[in-house]
Amino acid sequence: MNSSQLLYKISTLEHSISRKELEYNSSLRANDQPNIALHKAALLQLKEELAATRKQFDTVQTDNSKATPPPPKKSRKWPSFFGFRTATDNE
Image (cartoon, one colour):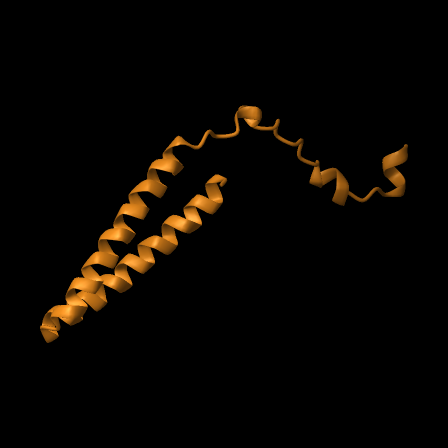
């Protein structure tokens, strides 16, 4: 996977974790023991996958082929572009 795919996967996992934490907290408030255990196990699995993905992202090599920025483009000389000549300028 390249870095953009890994970043997308990381953001998706973070979103999934936040949703699962909401479900876990609502189960805690309702004191629903089977769902508490289920959400807690899923939450731990998501956090482990996130840690592994972040570790994989940290080891991705960056593309060093473009180490130097491109040279700046020369700007146009707008005053001469908009300058109008009169008949007396040619003398």
